[in-house]
Amino acid sequence: MSAVHGPIIIGSERSEAGIPAAMEILRAGGSALDAVERGLRMCEDNLEDHYIGTSGLPNARGIVELDASIMVGSTRAFGAVAAIKNYPNPISIARKVMEELPQHALLVGEGAEAFAEYLGFSKAELLTPEAKKLWKDQLKTINSESIEGENTKATTGDERYRMASLELVKRMAPHEGPWGTINIIALDKSGELVCGVSTSGYPYKHPGRVGDSAVPGAGNYSDIRYGAAACTGRGELALRSGAARTIVENIRAGMSPEDACTAALLEAAALPDDFRAELRCLALTPDGRHGGASGMQGSTYTLMTEHSTGPEFHPRRPL
Image (cartoon, rainbow, N blue to C red; front, side, top):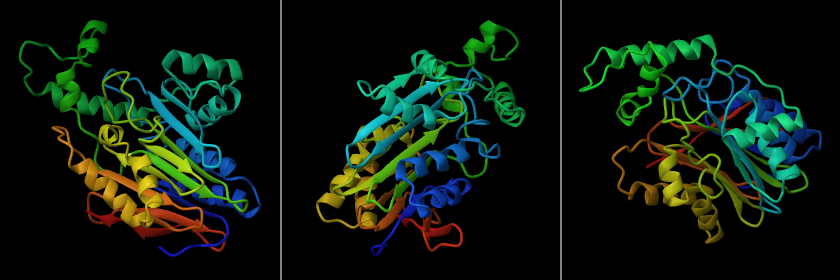
């Protein structure tokens, strides 16, 4: 994609819930950091989206755990939280880790929750009735099948604990419809390049599982010299291949954003993986070039410039 002058913002599927508000900040001369946080907060608050923030699908025990990260291209400052419960806007907590706790970059679980409480973030019930129903329906499907040596009916605390066994996690699948992490990358008028990622993780995951979204170089990376990149989908493959950093390094080597994303996906696809699922990525450069790639036909990413009247949808290159 050719260069675009002026502020620009791109995001993964379903980021259109927050990108228009983020572009309002950029048009007014605001920072890419504020725009990315604002855009992802709106996505986190979108109750119709079950893969991020409030209404995210829970882990195998029925508990919603959220991951998020944010990275600034000029300094490569990074903040993240992972496996955080009861706080609906992890992207804002991740930003505070970066700004208020710069001696660290990533907080997880109870430590992340204690930090959020200290800063006065509001708590909320993240498991909405609709998401809880989706989880229970999935358990009913599993209960109707025989699992050798184990009664899987969730009626007591002990039985519910067994629901989180490895075998059950392997067998539980996402619901039908669009799903996955959301990432947003913004370039502001000053030339700052910021990337943010937020997710409730793989649905019905093993408790404590953390994917690529909270890990720099895996699901999120930004370097003002070359570009920013982010991933959605099979987070374990992004972790193992260092996908986001690989994309930025490919751009550094002279590849276009689209070619850089494609090469990173091909590298990840070469890894052995018994639980292979699709991985997608997108990238934005300091001169406004952008592109994405995916493991299937029909995938898109969202774009807005200061001249856009609304979100625009661009195809990702399929492998």
